[in-house]
Amino acid sequence: MTSAIDPEFALYGYFRSSAAFRVRIALNLKRIPAEPRFVHLLRGGGEQHAAAYKTVNPQELVPTLLHDGHAIAQSLAIIEYLDEVRPEPPLLPDEPFGRARVRQIAYAIACDIHPLNNLRVLLYLRDRFGIDDPARADWQRHWMTNGFAALETLLANSQQTGTYCHGDAPTLADVCLIPQLANARRVELDLSPWPTLARIEAHALSHPAFEAALPKNQPDAE
Ligand SMILES: N[C@@H](CCC(=O)N[C@@H](CS)C(=O)NCC(=O)O)C(=O)O
Image (cartoon, rainbow, N blue to C red; front, side):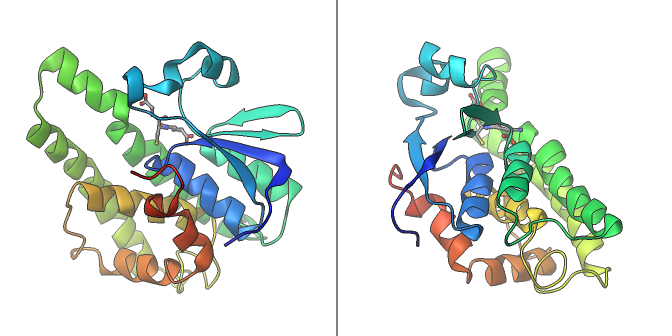
């Protein structure tokens, strides 16, 4: 959806990474065509563990944003940074309760759901405890179900919810929700118990910034 690459920005990511997916959405919304740098999370044991990448991000995770001589990791820190250096369109509301509510939704996903389903956690379950593929998929569905049920209640019962999680424009909350729902589809989680989440997802994916950021639309998609 974007044109020539902006040489000011580069993003280390992987097509399936939902944390990188969040940043791709934010960059698209702000019309920043960052140079993509691909880190294959599985090849050769994971390129995130290569010495060269460790100097960029000592946590050995994607995404990492390069801008203005800085390497910034943690998707939420990156997105709030982008919101400060490129404020339009804003991804956080302009009043304190709205900002807190959007962060509440974003953190429920990024801090409480996503980490339990991350690759390194799944690999540890397999390698340390011998947990097989179906049981690990069940683990993922369990923690997503737990988190989505709470989000559905929050969103369905709030007048602040609009066509997006907070009002009628995309915010940090949607930037986190849509990639998490993509992860849920990968493990064949039935989303029908959460109609508000599904409605917001359908609406968001009609926006080119979200659609272009989908894993399947990335150059490194397999
Ligand atoms: N809290 C971090 C999470 C980053 C993260 O977990 N990234 C995953 C991909 S979604 C990763 O790089 N995993 C590699 C691994 O587990 O080895 C953020 O929001 O950026």
